[in-house]
Amino acid sequence: MNPEIALSRTAPEDGSTTFTPAQLGHRRLHRIVFSEEAIQRRVAELGREIAACYGPEDDVLVLGLLKGSFIFVADLVRQIRMPIQVDFLVASSYGKGRVSSGEIKLWYNPGASIENRNVVLVEDIIDSGNTIQRVIPMLMEMNPASLELCTLLHKRLVRLPREARWVGFDAPEEFLVGYGLDFAEDFRHLPYVGSI
Ligand code: IMP
Ligand code: MG
Image (cartoon, rainbow, N blue to C red; front, side):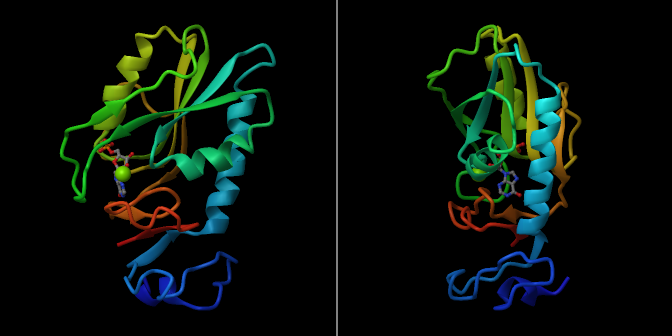
């Protein structure tokens, strides 16, 4: 792949907007992996697929795992054309490195009750699966009517006991940033997913 693609000043043919070198703080992305347009198309499909799985009587709560899912959740919920509610929980791993430390900090503020509700847990990316395997049992203890997982990206390195029902894209084994994903808190605001 051409490393210059992320640095192009003109929009590539697929219409996605790239950041200029200055806008990237003169740091280089290796390549764009999923363009803004490809992500938006897939998110619209996911929204339709999720809506199709629930009836009008179902009490659906979309629960985003912060921080990485914040942009994905914001776009996804606008594509779910049915009554839903939205809340977030906070979990973090990795710290400043690129490799999962295996240690996960979990803060949960149950602003919304989960009991007897249909929860759609939204992740940015499943890598080692550590985060999700910690969070799911905790949520199951709160007796949701159902719990399904939606992730934008899945590296397919592990098979989870409870596999994601909706996956945006299978992700390559690269360190990905943008569209919510960070490297040491940088690059979250890029409208596309790139690798570094
Ligand atoms: P896991 O616990 O190893 O599955 O990793 C889950 C979390 O690690 C994700 O929610 C991300 O915040 C972070 N993560 C995993 N892989 C990447 C990556 O390639 N880029 C940025 N963050 C990542
Ligand atoms: Mg992260």
